[in-house]
Length: 269
Ligand code: ADP
Image 1 (cartoon, rainbow, N blue to C red):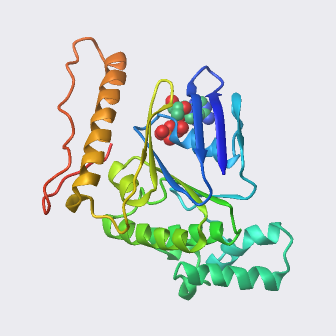
Image 2 (cartoon, protein in one colour; image 1 turned 90 degrees about the vertical axis):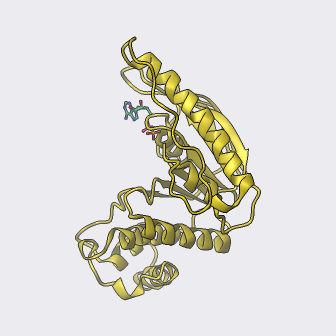
């Protein structure tokens, strides 16, 4: 279980990125952190994963975190297999063991054929798969993903979302997934944590109790959750904008809420 208590993170210069965050993630749960740019999602992920230290409060529970970022951040001079094996080498495993485990991880993400390729020879989706394999090979107790599919085209994103769910169901690892897309969060997670900024804080924590795969457009309950969270978020965005913009600013129309089946529409933030 991950347990964050009363987390505050203030950066040098005074920005209070997070304030008063309390969050408990039971083992094996898949949660998403959603909110507008700058609300502290990445900061919270870093604190939960132990990559950063809070200014106040505490995080307990994670012994073996693994993190995947939007940019796969593979070593360009290493092959895919070497990239995946590297973390194990640092742990002191034998060359043969590293190789064997890395090969299994690459099979898991369906990338075995490219084991000897270099990162620049891969598509964006393949690079993210390699990054996920590099994380999984460490046998983490929690997987932290910071907008992992944000730079991918819609089809690749959808494919990788499905693969991530399959991996999660198989490994039962806890997942903390950062996204700015409410639709992605609701489609994937057990629980959506909605955040707002100034200071970064949690404004909603919603359980999504629905079988997967989920088709938001055809599920009235999920569409209603999406509408409710989007309305809450729009209010927050308007509140922050009112503080930042000139006093003659009169706001903008609310973003499109959920759409009828078959229609196009977006819920990105
Ligand atoms: P998000 O992931 O939701 O876009 P971040 O966690 O990246 O938000 O940032 C939250 C706030 O903290 C922002 O105002 C950002 O500018 C600030 N911030 C993030 N990292 C640093 C840093 N290293 N130094 C100073 N300010 C930072």
